Length: 186
Image (cartoon, rainbow, N blue to C red):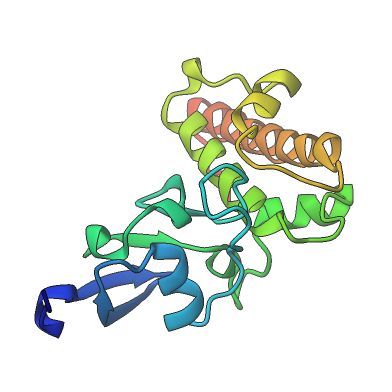
């Protein structure tokens, strides 16, 4: 039985790294393949293609996801952030990217885009529900356990995430203290 092209393709809109795209995609195309092959965003990697390694991790609506498991057509209208969208030309690297550099958490770099997106998602989850997040070594290691690193950079990755979590907590405390004293913190 033959299917017409119209039955196997759909036009979708995605907002990727702050840019809007209208794309005609096959229903079987994963979000990962759309990002890599249709948009040229090759940061997210195809490691296992089974959602087990985390190399393909991106953020969809701010939540970390394995893009190799998601059909692109199911995310029509979604906001997607890849590692390419974490930093920008005006403000430079994302704090996590800087912390990965400082802690030498990059190693070979293959898993790094997924590790970074997962860490950004983890810190956003912690900010949204501070009481539920364990940002100690064990808590971060557990929360990042879906992202594998063949080089064994786990301790440095955890340290980098802890550095940014601590800096964020310090900034929030300083802002709260200043607000209580009637000062403005820039």
